[in-house]
Image (cartoon, rainbow, N blue to C red; front, top):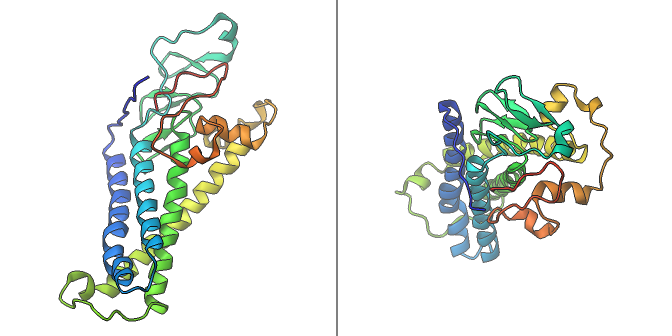
Amino acid sequence: MSLRLHFVVDPMGWFCVSMVLFIWLYNSVFIPQLVLLPHFQEGHIPGAVVFSYFLTSLLCLAALLRASTADPGRLPQNPNIPHSEREQWEMCSKCNLMRPKRSHHCSRCGHCVRRMDHHCPWINNCVGEDNHWLFLQLCFYTQLLSLFTLVLDFCQFYYFQPLARSDGERFVWRHELALLRFSSFTGLLMFGGMSNLFYTQITGILADTTTIEKMSHFVEEIDAPRQPWQQTFAEVFGTRWKILWLLPFRKRQALCSPLSFPSRV
């Protein structure tokens, strides 16, 4: 099935996404010009470090764009419910549509989402069954890119040798200290925030509990037996090939499940 884009009309969400894109652009343009590329040209760092930095930056951006525009699992207007599964469905009191249990109505988006975890303003989208894997990738690559940036900032301050060739008239050199301080501040902010979010997401997946269920004390009503962690993550990422769990440039295929729908992500 073809890829379907999903956009949420929310000015606050657009602002939050713009802020995230600004931080990504800042650390992907100024930091390479100020630290990465000059020290590579003078032989202070190997080319593998430069390649790894830009690859991490690319994967982070791809995960952000895909998580922001992917269908999180929006339910159709007239779902075809097999008679044997009707007990696993319920009526939404807000949109008056049938939905599988553990779905949730998002007041910001205005529709129900299958196994909705939460609505994230930083991607201006819900995190649900079909894009949860992209949100996990975004958290992971944002941590990695932030840590990479912090290490480069630290090395620029305390480890790297002074550059033999530097154009003092260029903007990045005239404001080097301010640019590095802002980069370190955003790096610490993003790394700390994403590390905490990534930890809560991983523990929630292992416990088979969404953020909404934790907040609404719905955990006691979920009596399904726990699965091995490999199977749990395979269902989230839509594949048992662990190497594919790291790639946002693919289409998720939902594993066999009684209440699963064809994924459009």
